[in-house]
Length: 348
Ligand SMILES: Nc1ncnc2c1ncn2[C@@H]1O[C@H](COP(=O)(O)OP(=O)(O)OP(=O)(O)O)[C@@H](O)[C@H]1O
Image (tube, protein in one colour):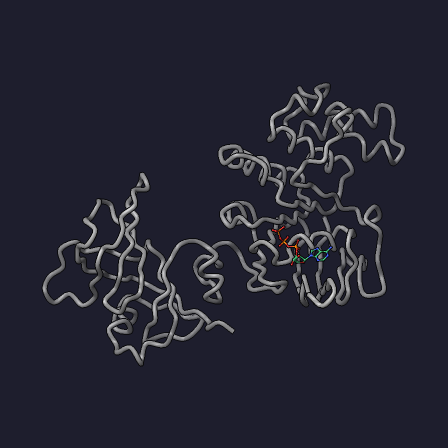
């Protein structure tokens, strides 16, 4: 197990910085995700880790070994890393076992040791019974597990995964999330997982690097990203919620019910702090008493099975999302209690 240090790494294509002074320190054996919208530079960062792209500035270290810097470039095959792609990249003319064994066969491994390595890798992804099948005779999820076994066989220190579930349907993705967690638990390898799907990143990684336009927006655990997003942009990217202007709080501060409700009742010119309110922190009072402070109009009601999602409009004109256990009528006036909020940094 070896840790990875990414120190102010920059990659430019022409004038455009696809990755801009990105720094991350990844612990040995950690499972991390690079998360961000399309074009934010996730794949470019992963390709620099793998050695398929050079870096323009900054450095990448694996343990105390420098893999890349402006004047160093260790080739991919000498980095002790393995990469899993969205497209699986299996050889169609080779059996499952031959696909899995290919990287170590290239290194000259043969005989009983070879057989044992392949067998162990297949067992780790629970595909021992499929060794002689051809890839075409497997489901998408099974193919992705063959790709995982193939990267395991060479005992890499780091496994890089580029949107490995993007080609699978929703149900299979959920099953594969279990396979990935299991894979990580058994191998203890350092895993760097690229995705634009926040729920996938939250379910899998112990820490997530949220990227935006080549830069690191926030680097934190899934819980911290959800409860304490740094900026308005992260707050709108992770989970559901509403951003309200409040006359209370300062960036990085949690507001309790009393302060939040008071801050919302202030006059518009004093309400300058952006505050994130998650729907689970809103109580809807269908028939509020006449003196209830905060009111809203129901604009939309969506049935989500376990609850109703209420789209509300405050008197200030701001939109608010809430959950409720029963359907309410569109156009109806309701009272609200906001139990807590999180104060955000303004947009740069
Ligand atoms: N070889 C290249 N030449 C020129 N520009 C490139 C090259 N590779 C990537 N880019 C640009 O760099 C930026 C980041 O691309 P990258 O593929 O890393 O994004 P991404 O976050 O992985 O996106 P996606 O989720 O769509 O794969 C984009 O603007 C892209 O057009």
